[in-house]
Every structure is written in structure tokens, then in C-alpha cells.
Amino acid sequence: MDWRYITARPVPERENWDKKIEFLLAVIGFAVDLGNVYRFPFICYRNGGGAFLIPYVVMLIFGGLPLFYLELALGQYYKSGCITIWKSLCPIMKGIGYAICFIDLYTGMYYNTIIAWAFYYLFASLASLSTFELPWTKCNNTWNTAKCKTMEFRRSINGTNTDDVSPAQEYFEYQVLEMHRSTGIDSIGPIKLSLAFCLMMVFILVYFSLWKGVKSTGKVVWVTALMPYFVLFILLIRGVTLDGSMDGIKYYLYPSWDRLYDINVWIDAAMQIFFSLGPGFGTLMALSSYNKFHNNCYRDAILTSTINCLTSFMAGFVIFSVLGYMAKKMAKDISEVAAGGPGLVFIVYPEAIAEMHGSVFWSILFFVMLITLGLDSTFGGLEAMITGLCDEFPALLRRNREIFVAFIVIFIYLCAIPTTTYGGKYVLELLENYGISLPLLFVVFIETIAVCWCYGSEKFSCQIEEMLGTKPGIFWRICWKFISPLFLGFIFFAALFEYKDLVIGSYVYPNWSILLGWTITLSSMTCIPLYAIYKYLSLSGRPIERFVKSFKPELDVSTGSYGGRPGGAATSGADTAHGVQQQQNEINKSIKSIISHV
Image 1 (tube, helix red, strand yellow):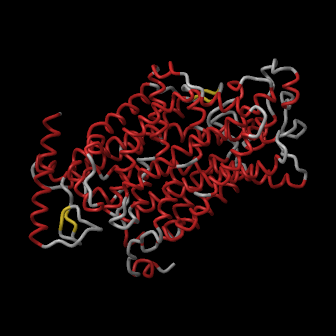
Image 2 (cartoon, helix red, strand yellow):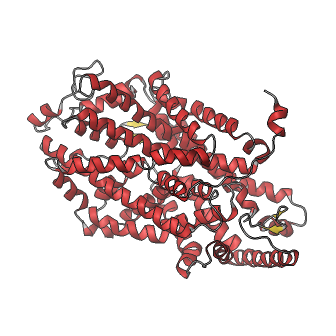
Image 3 (cartoon, helix red, strand yellow):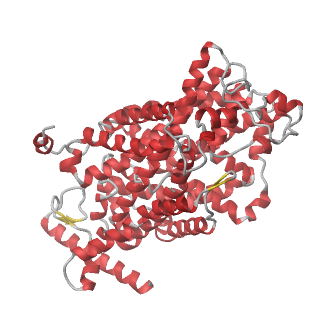
């Protein structure tokens, strides 16, 4: 390879979305993911049905939406990814960007494996076109055990034998994952080649969707963002026509008002809205950084977050109409067939599909929907990391984006290989539980403090006024400065308070794996204090001077101003000098205010 060619080519300018609709589809595709299908419906019915919508909407308005709007506006104004942007805001907090890259890395290592499972089911469904019978319908397959009983048999004995297992469950555990070949995370066994192949298919699609930046991603999201809605509407129409579907929908929506007095319901609502909208992954910042400067990101935030929440609500009808049908066929209460997490979409729903007329067709549709739901979410997560690093090292990485994206995709694929072993589910659960939740909450909490207190919410509101022509209302400024930090602190400490060592069924993770899990958690969180120490030590002057300098936006040599204005109008030398002095004074006031509060 000629390295002189790689480093000699001119650095390409930052791109913009070809069409506004492509940006909206990309944001919707990222926010609407697998969790909208398998997490929200289960959490909703578990926490009071229709009554749960009250805390859900409250948390959306006062917590999720302000953070969603904040990140879209930040990315659009500074036209920077999650790392470089901190030079213009609060340089000592640049470790936030590196922490986000770690979180996106861990997400890519496990989330794509779930999409690979969906590919496995899709291939199995396509193979069933020759027999018109899905492989998880009966118990006469080579992977089945003596405990396997068909739905018809379990209905005939009214479910009195609690040891009976459905064909769909055995298919998932003994054929897809082959978990019985592993004794736990300390003995995960060899790689299952069929899963590794499915995972490779996922990463190939990811590469060719990201390699050209928003030019390629903008075309792919027309399929990946719209296809799930097309399939959801078809499945909804089919679901409500099934016998017993109305019982499932009533169970989903029936309000239990007394549940509103339970603090855990509000915690679940806060966590659901936060992880559903997805601030903190750097994706919203990255996607909006390719917008035109005067794009109305406020309207985009309202529109896309509303669509995301309505999609979750509609998915509940799709899932519970089928669960009502399944409960009636098995003569059971719906609570006995409902389940949360991946088990809902890989065990419960496929078993219900297998009982329908034209089951192979419905199965193909369902797993195509899952794949497209997952793909554009993984596009967003990896684009956040790619954009952040390309902006930080443009001479090397943005100039050679195709090579860099290939390196990232291959690297994450190799890191994800352990999740395709026979004990891969144990690895996947460890990554999901320790690599994402707490670090993400911590990162967004620090991000909000850095932007709204260290940099200044009033100053940032004035920058939004430059873009939109209107300053954000008092509601948004109060949310950013007070309510959002309280919202994040609330769910962060609630998550800490509710922490328990990881357990899957009867399997208890060994102590060394719990220690490894916390190492994964801290690997991203410690980026923030470690970079802050590095930044402080790299500056000259007395201790207090170093501290003050580390919070000041760095001089942008391309514009001659602090913080720069990548999309704004040019400024005169006098205006620039006045702006620099004014921003310095405001930053000094903010730092003094923080110190006085401490």
C-alpha cells in the first residue's frame, strides 16, 4: 500500500445531506430500534397498562425531549462529531467524546449479534418455503428434547406440567444458540459458524451503508427506516383479525391507576424514554452535523421524538394482539405467555406465528422487520464513532474514509466473534448490562453539566437563535439547566441502587466475570477524568490559571474566534475580539458560579 498516496490527497470538505428527508429518516431509524418492539410493550403492561403512559409522557417532555433537542442543536451548530465539538465548548470535557466511542464500540459488539439472530431466523423461514412448515412448529427435530411439547399438547393438559418447553424455545436455545454446549461464560466453547456467517452478513451491509458517509447512508435509510412501518401495519392488520386479539389489547391498555404511586414505575418510564430516544450515543450529534446551518432542528426534534414514541405505542398493539390470540389457543392468562426482552421476539412471537395460516410468509415479514429495525440503529451508532474520529483526525481518517470504515467494521466484527460461540449469549448479556446503561447515563449527565453550566445555557440559546432566528423558550432553558440534570441524576442513582450481580435464569455469573463487567463499565467512564487530568497538566501557568484555561473554548484558527461558527456568517476583526472577550467573561462567571456552589 502506498502510504504517500494515503496522506497526500487533499482533505475532503464535510458533506451535507442531499435531502432533508434523508436526515429525518436516519434519525427516526436510529431512535426506532428493536427495543421499541420487545421492550416498551412489556414494560407498559407490567407497569399499569394505559396508566403507564402518564409517567412516560411526563418523562418525555421534561427529560428525554430536551436532551434530544440539545444534541441535535449542538451537532448542527458546530458541525462536529462527539470528540472535536468539545474544543469549541469546554476543552477539559473532551473525554466525553472518547467515552462515547467506547460505548458505541461495546454496543456494536453485542447489538449486531441480535440482528444476526434475526438473519438466522430469516434464512430458516426462507428454507421453509419448500415445506410450508417452520422448523420450530413440532418436537420431532434432532435438537428437541423429551421436555419439548407442542402447543396442542400443552393446551390438552391445560399447562399443568411446568417442565414442558415449547418447540420455539428449544429451537432458539438448542438450534440457534446451542447454549447446552456451553456451561457458562468460563466455558463458551467454539464459534458457531452459521451465526458467525450471519454476523458477517450484518457487517457487510453496515459497511456498504457507511463507507461513503451520508451520501450512502441517506440512500439506505429509505429502505431500513420505512420498511419496519410497512411491515408493522401489515402485522397489525393481521393481528387484530385473530381470535382473542382484543383480549390481548385490553390487557395491554387496561389502566391500573394505583401503579402510579409506585416509584419503580416512574423509574422504568424514565429509563425507557431515555434509552429509546438515544441521547449520549453521539449519533444525534453526528447526524445533525451534516445539516445546513439554518435547518429547523427544533421542529425535527419534536417530530422525530414523537414518531419514535408513537411507534413504540403501535408496536404494543402488534405484539399484544398476537399474545391474546396465543393465550386463547393455549387456554391461559395473557400474563403467562407475555415475556420481555429478546425472548419475546425470538420465542413467544415466532411460536404464535407458527400457529397462523401462511405462517412462513408472516415469519419472513416479521424477521425482515426486525433486521431493518436493527440495521439503521447500528448505522447510527457506528456513524457517531466514525464521524467523531474523522473530525478529530481529518488529515488521516476523513481523507481515507472508506479504508477507515473497513478497519472499524472488521475490528468490531472480530471483537463480536465471542458472541457467536455456544456460550455467546453469556458474553452478550455481560456486554449489554455492563457496557451501556450506567456509562451512558453518566456520560449524558456530565455532558449536560458541561454544556449548560460550564459553557452556559444562555450562551448556547443565543447560538440556537443564530440558526433558527428564535431563541429557545424559558421552558427549554430551565429543562437544560435544572430539570434534565435532575432527570439524569435520578435514573443514574436509581440504576445504581437497583444494581444486582448478573444472573441468567439459574446461572450465576462467576466473580471474575463481574469484575470484568465493571472494568468494561469503567473503561468508558474513566475517559472523562483521565482526559481532564491530561488537559490540565498540558497547560502552562499557575494551578488556578490552568484550571480556568481548561474550561475556555480553544481559538479556532479558521475563523479567529473562540468556539468558531462553522455554519455562521463571517465576522470582522473587531466583532471577533469583542466576542472573544465577552465569551471569556461569561466562562469565568460560570466557573466562579460552579466553584461557589461547590
